[in-house]
Length: 380
Image (cartoon, rainbow, N blue to C red; front, side, top):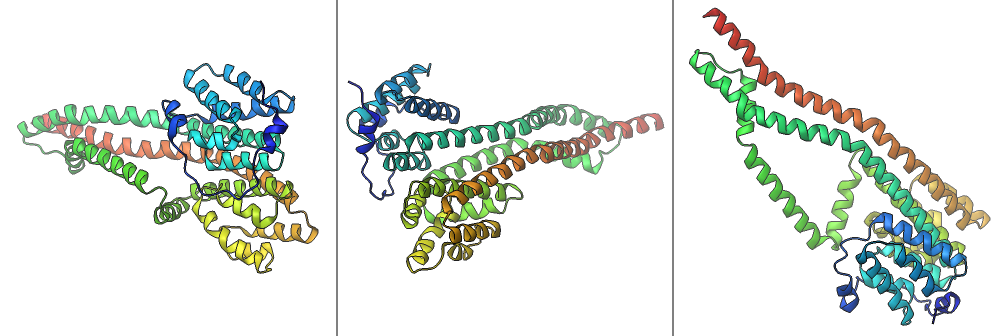
């Protein structure tokens, strides 16, 4: 027997979410072989579920249809696990959270949709969110693929020449009483310690990964990594803008659903996943409860830019906060898309120039002994 969507949505209790971690149990074991439900698969999942709900399809039937769209068994098992939990009486967001395959932003967004009876628009927003994320990733991959391949081939070729070709010239120079140039000596010395440097580098990377896995939920680590990321030229501002866009998008959804501002901020704190913004939520809530205007509280925190604060001030005066957050979301998304394109325009030639300089220095170091050797032979 199918699960009626309207009946299902009523099952969701309107309570303030607790900060939970993905639970284990039978469900987690059932789909533990699923390494990752990718962004592309999530975009497809949210899009199809939103379309089926809008068409009035029974909720269980909708999940059956979605399951048939995934060719891999591990993806089918994931959706079936969600379906099983929903049919047994759990809400969609609880079922998603239990799998461990969905972020806090996703299942809290779905929770908002369930509690406000606006699940279909929320699913479409999530679909668009992942669509933008996939587009951005593809742009970055296209930017870095060619330079990375060139760099990899260059390193392999140069390593071979430094370890096989240049040492031959060294022995020849020694026989003729010549001496290798200073630059060539330094390059050879570097090539000799290259295996050790590579091993140390790999161990360091593994150590950093282990440190990240152990401390990723701790406040000191989140604060420190956020600070370091924010200092990265160009990328730091872009990452901050992505999360500010998410901040605006989430508040637009909550306020449009007539959720009180303080309650909306409480929900938002669990969804952001970006420490600099999360750290401002409690002080902002406290200020609002004391009677301070929302924009005045935002002004106290540097993470919110002047344009955003000014527009929120106008929105408060005309009581159109939800509409203003929608406009801000659109503006930030346009800026993010433009800046992502600029990454390709700026970084690709920059990386190629850097590779060219490195290759040029090494080639000069390798070939300069050849010219010196010809002079020695001719002179002899």
